[in-house]
Image (cartoon, rainbow, N blue to C red):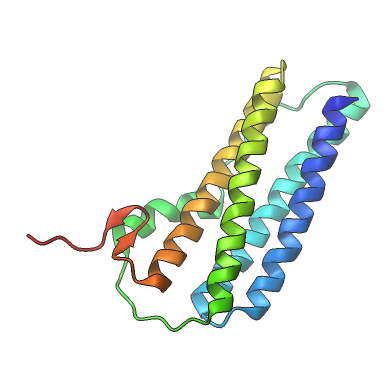
Length: 166
């Protein structure tokens, strides 16, 4: 069944992302980066659990579970960061930026995959689940981009200038 294959693929991707984020957390020098990667890994664990629940649901009864997926810790954090960012000086090795860039590419790919799956689904609960997962992956992209901006000192934080010339 194509739907089961898509869910199994998504579960595999989430497991791999979780493993990768834990490896990045171990290798990252900046404490905030370590914490971010650990939080991302935990979010991926939650995504995996959502997908596994759906797989079990459709395997047993051929029906999607329409349970609501609540906001993740990262989704709740992103707006707070926009409001409360404190400027900090950071030291980072090139490995940190490489890890963040890789993570950003993977999160964007996951977002696109979930959006595509949502479009392919005819079941409303399936569409809703995949769209929510895409939103969560988008929040991951935002938090990773913020960390990259902070390390690079671009003057931007979550897409907004840190200061103005006024």
